[in-house]
Image (tube, rainbow, N blue to C red; front, side, top):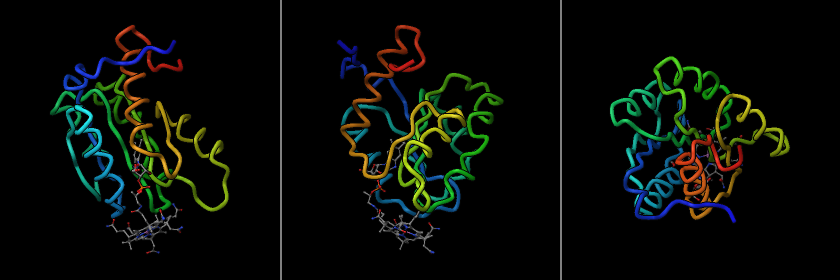
Length: 155
Ligand code: B12
């Protein structure tokens, strides 16, 4: 059986959300932020048009446990390049990094796109059309795994 986080523990976990780069697509990020808040997680909402270093600054200031990056406008790969390295430079070596929205450009298969973001150091990348209960479930599993000293539930 896969271990999952006790929902009462979600309030102890802080997640930073935002839309990276020059991307103005705010709707999905807002829905995601509200769903995570409703699930009980503590959410720091940066909104649209957020430079990479603003995510990291906010994560340091709030002692965040994870960063949820949204990207839809097709520049996600460029905007997210070096994101994990920026986290490491700032001392956030182990912070959980998720990315989602619409990361696919053209007809590139999802598996190829996903691998690119995982290779960049994101712990999980989510395909277009991901529903919020799936995100809550992944967070619950990963934070339960982290409590046992693992990086994610799948590692
Ligand atoms: C509405 C819209 C716009 C609006 C945005 C209004 C606003 N301020 O939000 C406007 C008209 C401004 C716009 C502009 C542009 N857009 Co537009 N837009 C869309 C559209 C139709 C819907 C996006 C949306 O709101 N979806 C609804 C929400 C609920 O879904 P979502 O964002 O995917 O979020 C869900 C999940 O993905 C997930 N999720 C989201 N973020 C994250 C993060 C994490 C970590 C996780 C786990 C999950 C997660 O949770 C959400 C809840 O289920 C899409 C096409 C589509 N049908 O998706 C194109 C689309 C995103 N746009 C596109 C493009 C190209 C543009 C422009 C570049 C067009 C242009 N040439 O000007 C500009 C970019 C402007 C900019 N600088 O940002 C392309 C992107 C293509 C790509 N990825 O390669 C799309 C896919 C259209 C297309 N098929 O070509 N757009």
